[in-house]
Image: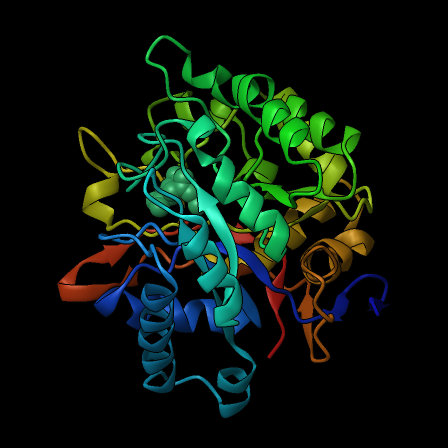
Length: 359
Ligand code: NCD
Ligand code: ZN
């Protein structure tokens, strides 16, 4: 129901969902939950906590903690009622088909996340041998639980800029061949190769795209000094890849939808000799995506990407409430207070965005 008034000055869209977010745990939730719930109805919560969310019981307990922080927040009753955190299981070498069955029957687990061991933040307990996952993938097919992939190989000898492409060729092809009805989301894609790959598959394969991969490339990360707040995994690629991602995101293809991958790390852990991977974008994600779409004259395609295609992929109804974006500039906060006196520095901290959320 995109309605554009005043010659593109205001844009009302169905309330978006975030199909890939890191809320973290405990005191971090006091910041991350209100930020997410301010903009999104449904969010798929990544399970890479310490320790990870490995069972339906872990997922239930995590969801409860999230809801406690929601209730303690200053959000309106309306936003609190609309927020619906959906859980994922973290696949390990020890996950069983029974774990999958219990997750599917729990009613609160939306998907299963596969991190190749060592690929990213808190992935040490991830999968070391994909070939050992056959029973688990079979159970996921049987119970219609989608597989969410951190799609990068982890071998030391593979260049960091090639790791996504190698995953497509060496791992994903094999999973799709062996499990042809398994629903799969390639999370946070970063390359033309991944976009083309997803386009070439059936409707069971989709992808999420982050704001940073639509708006930035590796020059922003590395030129004129290392900018740790642009460092995330998979790492930003060349401008040609950024362009390809913008093309598919704004194409109206239902295979590509919103997943911020908003991944909070304290400012001091980002601005360090060995800085953490992850961009924090949750609170300003809608203006960021609107800016990206508008940059290529495709703001009219925003609603499909933010509010329709993800729900469609997961077999859920679209939201009924709406949000209005307005092209009145906003400044991204320089930082947010986080737990125990720390701060969070968001993506594009201190910079101006041409779009903001109305009201
Ligand atoms: C994420 C995190 O910090 O949890 N980091 C990131 O760079 N994206 C993990 C992930 O999604 O890879
Ligand atoms: Zn992530």
